[in-house]
Length: 551
Image 1 (cartoon, one colour):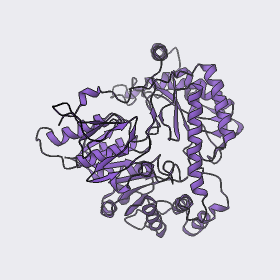
Image 2 (cartoon, one colour; image 1 turned 90 degrees about the horizontal axis):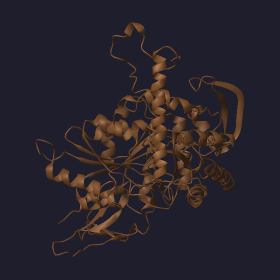
Image 3 (cartoon, one colour; image 1 turned 180 degrees about the vertical axis):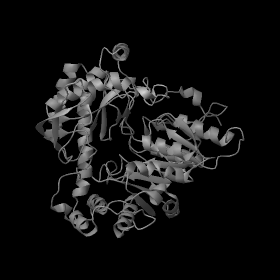
Image 4 (cartoon, helix red, strand yellow; image 1 turned 180 degrees about the horizontal axis):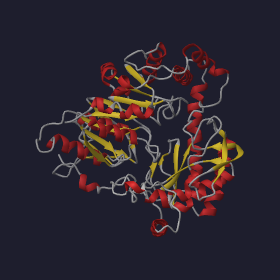
């Protein structure tokens, strides 16, 4: 990124371009603090320090992690041999005998990990919940008699499990109470389904009311809502870019962004996570060299990022990316699925978090599935952008419209956050979430765990590394009536399995202390306190000097 003085932002730091005489000019950023970034002659002041942690694991931890996977692989091949020989029963999907000469429908090697590693610890996923996903929920107990190939329910309900896994950031996904009366009224008046698309008979007054409210909340010209968050990305990106366009995508972008980019037919290039050097090199090469073979200029260059990354807990470095996109005349698409409602002084996402104008972002996307306790998504920005999508969006043309009670739930939640309900309870929830997040992260750091991400992010990944510890961690915590989400390969790198905690404004200090006490004991039991307080260069995989951009 360059400012008026010629500074370049690289790996979270603002470096000045070196002149041939060795002098430097421009503004600079020390310890992640941006003092000033001047864009188009208009200074923008940003005084918030960017504090993110990606600590390296000790060498012995990585050695034992890879050894664990190696031993598991060896035994997996042995068990596959026993299954193929008929000595051991094969419970996995197999080809029918009459199709043995066909091309295999179930590729054995592709399913190897699922059969031999995932199945051993499958009881830690897809646990059936039988209550609202509030700060406490109820779990249906199940057991397996065949090593997790099948499950049976015992009929017992595990009551009042502390919910540390749901994206219920503001605590608005709860069981029915009197505050939801308007949702009930809309259900009675409109019914559940619309049974039509937005282009046909599926645009209701509730949809228009919601779109106007979203635009007001985000402080942009217009917005359009969709019935499914995943499809908001995957079905709208192909309407914005196509053949002859270039997408620059963060390496940790969500699967919906990846799918949308692939469906668009545009050329895709990946830059290292939150790495401004890597992004600027791709931008500069795109402008200089253009399209492969023809060397024609790209029709569009679209930068795609997320607000809060759900597996890393990091926050996009928006000031630097905006300056880069302005310098190279690119467009910016930001997915705020996890950041809208959960970051910023009033919950308006990363633009507010950094004190920036939301109109600096060309396409604002978000979902209603997290902070708003509902479902669906939105695209917001300039009116001409939204009008274009109303005509060309695949979701608008082919997908069923958002359910009216869902639309009313979002309207109710958004008014609550904005204070349009006549109270300040929504603002208090946003502040409580920030307070809970800082407290939870600080305590985990003090205990000696390795946790990833930004200190303001309510998504808190705690690194477990070894597959055996992933299973033990989740099982032991459930026995203590604490529900957590554990994540491993292929959703994370092979050696970086983790538990992902989602902090909520609805969590009381007593709940968080109960969880922290259990984690402290679990860290000692499973030897999970790996932190040496040494920051990692993992997100910055390139040597900085190799990206020095000379004038």
